[in-house]
Image (cartoon, rainbow, N blue to C red):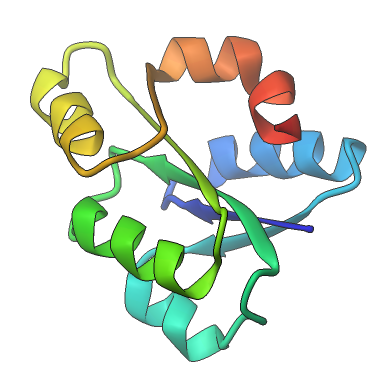
Amino acid sequence: MTILLFTNDLMFQSRIRSVAVSIGQELVVARTIEAVRDRALTPGSVHLVVFDLSLTGIDIAEAVEDLRTSHAGIKSVAFGAHVNVDALQAAQDAGVDSVMTRGQFDRDMNQVLSQ
């Protein structure tokens, strides 16, 4: 199965990829929803989408809706700085299944990516 990660943080992306590989998951990284559409991922192949809320220029609500349409049953997680209350709230309002601080995500990454 595939985990889709929206981020532009290369260092943290590397850490996430390492955990994903260790639990037998493929990691696809994107910076825009258009890039995901262009990749034409097999419908239903993505089981988890992870949003790094420090990534600007992405409409979380649009991305969640689009991905739920093309990948039935997909789960979503968003993480961001604890001081970025507006972004965390926007992710929750967009219907993201689990919204957490970056520290919480980092601490629980293995468990979160395994779901």
